[in-house]
Image 1: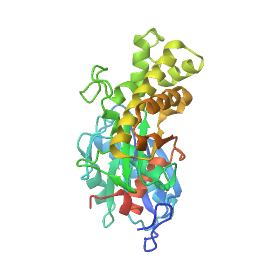
Image 2: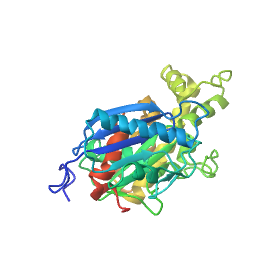
Image 3: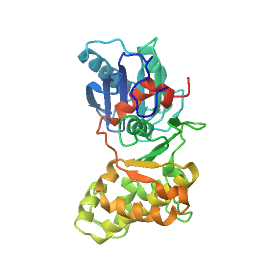
Length: 327
């Protein structure tokens, strides 16, 4: 195994990987070379119509994979890596994405294995794929112990300790979004109360702000609109991001104390609001992360772009020594 700052191991295979990133609104597929560079990629809507069933979505995904392989000259691939929204049964790869209702217990790994036999197929959570990408090629490169977070429609994450992805019993280790920061807080979609996700997820931000009087007659206003108003110094909009930053700071402080990570990489759509979120996050983190070893943690933004999900998915194959433990 190479050190954290090195490239691929000396005895590593050089064939590329078919990498897939599946979300609620789009599917991305690409051919990624052995050094983690996306050679060819393309995207398609996850749903072409509200009438799409599970097989229609699969057909669109398979066609997209075939298209990028054609564009790359039909290379011999060494495997298929996939990041997909959860929940899922891991590592068997039966997926039930929250934002993709037609897929319930869909046998994604088995379908891909049938389409691309004789190579490994590895399916993990899409947030974990982003964390792998940032550790391998981005803001966590060279860092042995890292927590990655994606703050968007939900709050997902992944945990790297001693240079390896930690999966846990069900593949959900590092899921900081469901750490409880206020037992009397708002209900969370997981069934609990006061989770980080209940405070910080984009739709929850907008819903809370609307309850406080922000754009009460505009039910379509979303977190992006909220961010625009916060930048314009709207009191309630700013308070929504202050509240989210507080919850994230508390969750990170607890995670750092438990796992002794040295870096947190925090991305996702909500994080793009910048200082409106990161300033209260940092303030809260420094207030509560008082034990000496936790004071040195750094919170960074991601380096990689929209290809991060594909790069991380490729990492399940290309750097399985670090990022895959289930075979």
